[in-house]
Length: 347
Image (cartoon, rainbow, N blue to C red; front, side, top):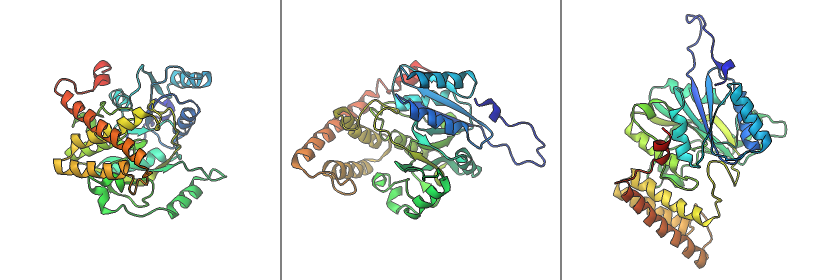
């Protein structure tokens, strides 16, 4: 924990309420400089009460990174957990079990955040109907030449939309309309981006929700799967454009060990979409989701805009059906294996 960030006792009659403790969980895998800059931004936050948990799946860091993490841990500024496996949902669950905060916030290990980022997430929880906050994500954008956050924010806002279309609340097809990069106005949503999302602790403790560790590879859709299960609670997921960050989106490393161009990634991409559908949707909703998945990602129709080459369509179709078969087997295995191997081995 960042000791200097613990609020001091004060006269409660004249002071605003103490802000809730936020546990910031950063799963990381084979990241060096970007992890350091992410932590530097985080430890410079204008927020009085937070802890940082780094769930480190890197086996061997560069000397500079290793020294930096060791120094932060020794100073009590972060809790540094080194694990011997690589699983994004496993790392999230591992961090939740070791956190103390009233709010659990997840960010990636390659983000740039403004000084009031934690406060932006926290203030949403003053509303009792909010159980999770989806922050705004700016992908692959650069700061202005002066490093002025407000100038950058203004430029991005001018190119955005105010509200998502109604289809973004349809669980079967929302994934082709739900783009949390652009909306300028706060609104209810059905999912969040995994690099910028927070939850009330009760989501985990009172309702027993956890990330499904059967999501493979880069774990695409693992956060969508989790967010869909929040429908079983009394809370909403609220999108706040003021809780924004820049996601650099490095092509390698991060929370997984797969390149997006690899054959294994292609297989797990489809497997994970089918698994999300099997976990959360009715049969009718599943058919609509799987049809849209085929139309967009296999045939390449908008909004995917993929090559219509017969060879490439055939190749994507093979992975589509292999992913479906694998996801069916994953659901059958739940009879004897729920896939939560890391939560069982590292309680």
